[in-house]
Amino acid sequence: MTHKISTLVAMGMTICMAAANRATRAQEADVLERISAACPDKPYAQPATPRTLLLFTGTRGYRHGSIPVGTAAIKALGEKSGAFAVVHTEDIAVFEPESLARFDAVCMLNTTGELFTPPDRDKMPEVKRVEATKREVRLKKSLLDFVARGGGLVGIHAAVDCFYEWPEYGELIGGYFNGHPWHEDVVIKLDDPGHPLNVAFDGRPLEIKDEIYQLRAPYSRDRQHVLMSLDTTRTDMAKKGIHRDDRDFAVSWIRTHGKGRVFYCSLGHRDEIYWNPKVMHHYLAGIQYALGDLRADATPSAAPSDGGWVSLFNGRDLSGWKGLVDDPKKRAAMGPSELAEAQADADKLMRDHWSIEGGVLAFDGHGSHLCTEKDYGDFEMLVDWKISPGGDSGIYLRGAPQVQIWDPAEWPEGSGGLYNNQKHPSKPVTRADNPVGEWNTFRIKMIGDRVTVHLNGVLVVHNVVMENYWERDKPIYPRGQIELQSHGSKLYFRNIRIREVR
Image (cartoon, rainbow, N blue to C red; front, side):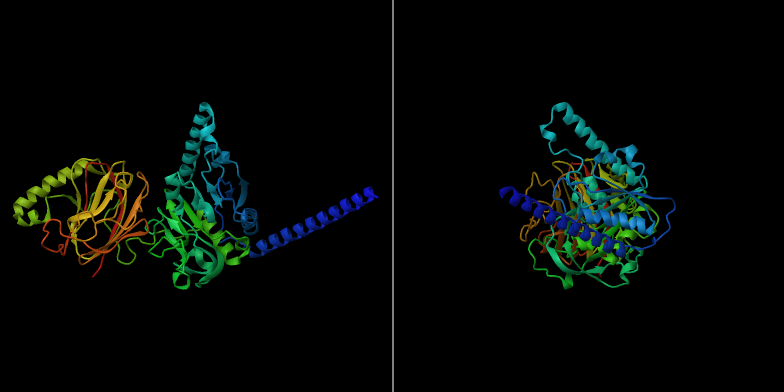
């Protein structure tokens, strides 16, 4: 009797498992059908040659449950449109130079963590640890070189949630993940409605439910062309975990790197994203841009031609800059010939110690400040800066010190404060510096005698009076030069732009 009961139970379980398997297969078929229906049946641009896309879904951190659906969607996009073939893997060996050379672009789909670093590297025998480190360096260089030489990079959702210990990757993809305050129905606005990658939206906002990312440096509209972003006027901005005071929550963008192209979109946490027709059309256009077949404007959104912005540094030479001659009070007391002679000496010193290295303005640690030839009154300024350990610098406004720059390891309050203030606040309200050796971005606004500073998208100084260091009994000068302060350490600046406020 017991044997019969056991047999019946086993038969029942088998029947239930078979039914469950049939249900799973039916669900999978339904998902694939939905994905296929959402995919365009033709490319946005005819491929110049047969294209192959490397689809990489490796993870060293959180693993998204939507990865299988996303993988199926990217494969379906290529197959149905005829725009590209897909090779899918999670083996990092594919990033070896000779392997990567087979592809036209790489798609990082929901990748997380330090992908090229073995999780147990610190426990390895020394010989294997050295080999693993050499391999990591080789694979990183391989990917950077691949894009710089004309390859493409596509990032979907968590592609900004990896390689935090590799700053060059953050520069390449366009930013790093810094939380997701929203996982709800949101409205995504089109920052560039007429852009070729946005044609699927017909000029209208996208209403969708997904996990919306918040980005941190090196994200900047000064370095990428933002296509879509969160409409904060139609979003709950009282959510916990919101760190950006500028309300800039980009959802997708493109940028260039050397001869290569990068497309990123943060949509892709939820399964149903991959059968949303508008999103799939956007992905196809973005992938074809990265592959090099769809031409599109990648001019940074905050480029000089946008809204009155003017570049102070052309990336080639020191045009528009001069050496420092004393302070404003002493310069004002000089006669024309005396000032001209002093300026000639200062300009020679400038040329000896300030130079251009790979499109970056570099200071060797000797000499004096670099100053704009033009004087400014009220303005808004963007500038990227990088220092070495123990570094100390600053931005002089109208010839007066200064919006502080220094190594937060030695000065824990961080950069951005109005260091020489005595009566008004001199320290930033929070520390927002990136680690020494990584790029930082200031957004400085000066109206009258009041200064507001954002560092890496974080408000650190809000509408604080800047005091006149040179003449304490007088207000700050109404006009004056911008100065990049030298303080005995190597410094690097780039993307220096200014917009006068009249």
